[in-house]
Length: 111
Image: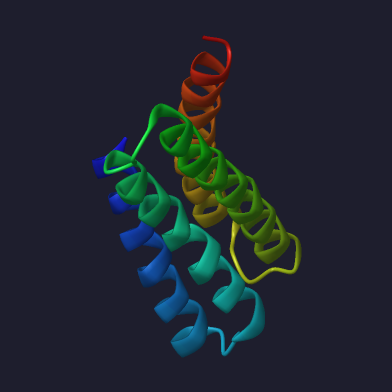
């Protein structure tokens, strides 16, 4: 989870650079950068949680950030800042993280 979320954060940083440099888009891309990199930051913080409840809380925040990131990617695609291939690639990775986080948090809260 930690490595997948870190690799996704790297993709978000690169996409942010592309959108700023090539598309001259600065508002939506900044939102994507913030939420997309926050997923991994919360996962990393959760690894050193003080308790199981703290761990679950950090992963819940990461899950919310993943859902927000999915929204920004969809919006960038709908406004033609991302083409279909670019959007689907990012969405696929984002949704994979989202499913993993949903599974983990569901398990943690049901025990």
